[in-house]
Image 1: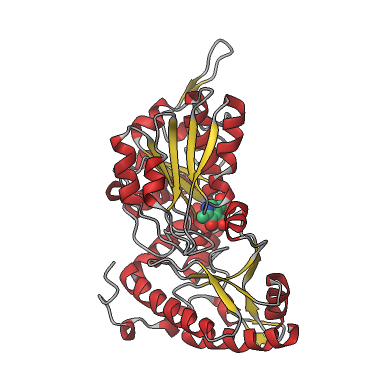
Image 2 (image 1 turned 180 degrees about the horizontal axis):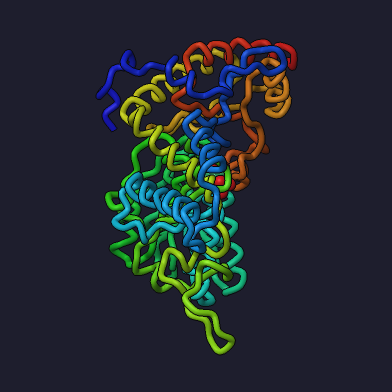
Length: 414
Ligand code: PLP
């Protein structure tokens, strides 16, 4: 991506920060430094207000009512589908299944796409750097079917070893999976190349886009994958929102996963028929207000622009990395050539959780732990890391405050 397209001076960070009320609060009497964005992002006022307005003015259930409010709620919910489809350049709105997040999306693919196809001896390919949401669903369906889950290796820099991933795309692989951006390492994976190799071999590819959509424009058609999963709460939207994009041919062939209201054409005791995709995968009342908020989140990203976001975040990433490297005994885990603003690290002689607890007392919110990536921790031979994950509403001054706090708590623990 061209990071020089827009100079940082046109990026009005103070105006942006004013849109995020939570950023101006204090924690333990200190100004908050929120560096836990890979966990969940903060929400701008337009998102909060859109949800508020929905409940104040338009609340009703979707699809079931002919009254005005029902029509308004349905239009808002279906409008979110349109917006999400455009946001990731899906060829059709009908290829977007609205879910509660990435986890529901990967489980839908596991039970509805993979399980009916898996035979004993088949395999699902994933990688060592995946979030558990892109490992455990595959293990569950592999156990039921006699298939196995294989994991493509990474190197010490935290980069996927592409040749090995490709070499592992053998005929018994019925589904390949990869994260576009690692939630622990920040590594950006070569998804287009992987998709090209999968297509050559007729293997469907699922991309976990959870950590990509908050940082970069996504075009599922250009990526060339078969499934793309995303979660709304990491991209300025509310919790409990997300989506699965899938090629139409897959959605048409997949049986429903959840049954209930909204997903049927006719229910009879001698045989129920189902609605067309995507509705056949959306049983029950959805998170209507949540998707209203997610719509507003997409508008917000578009008003700021990904070029500006990318340029600013890359500056912050470079600056934070440089400042962290000044700290004696600090080891960064994940030094890929192309990264999003996520920095995992350890400091000799300290525990990540102790550091995170003491940082919290300084007003700094970072995550410590395994980040739902046990196999990755096993690869690096560590039980946990400390992770600072940045967003476009963060500043260099916050990086400075984080470094001051880190030096202070490090001293206390050594
Ligand atoms: N995949 C990645 C890379 C993630 O970082 C996360 C969340 O941390 C998930 C999947 C799961 O997302 P959710 O819990 O919103 O379904």
